Length: 268
Image (tube, rainbow, N blue to C red; front, top):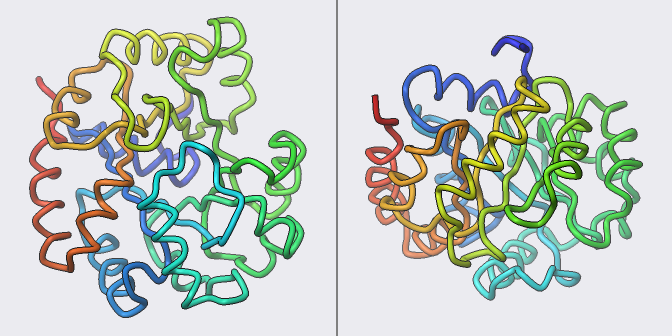
């Protein structure tokens, strides 16, 4: 089994939290949202908070959203894009000291080319997730690997039979980070603990070295407390609800973090 030290940066951060008796927390920021000044404050807040294991970020886009991207995420992208009109973001606004993965959309690849995206943002993230329209994930992964960037594997609950799911899991980087989609879309209804636990078991039967974080449908501290009881789950990813909190300002973001922080502890 791959040790924490041998894991990829995002996975290593989540495994560290798991070893400390809590779920690893991944939170989503979109550069420039809700304003560039507040984004920079929020970025510093997450970087300094020990409860936050990984920061998920994105290159703001104007079109090509997946159907499951809700209105708040689309609006946040529009606001962020106003600060970065050409669609690129300085690397220092994406990553400083904490593990970070970036969502890459088709618009960015069409504008810069995949190698152009990676070159322009070199040092800005440890891993990427490819959204629709950004090309073949497996071919893209060959390119990202040359830049020392992990391509995260995404698996949706109840989307694949066991054998196909395990095939996808086997394509993950050694000690990699698996993004387990636990609802039909952003803000959707969270899958049952039984379904999530079954998928975690299937993944780790095939790849015991990876970490697994649940995203989509994780809305509240109560959801996080429920997920902390799932065997085999290492972390949670929270996007829409965090964006809604930060839209209200820094104090609201701090209150949100305080509430979620207390829910991360795994039962003994």
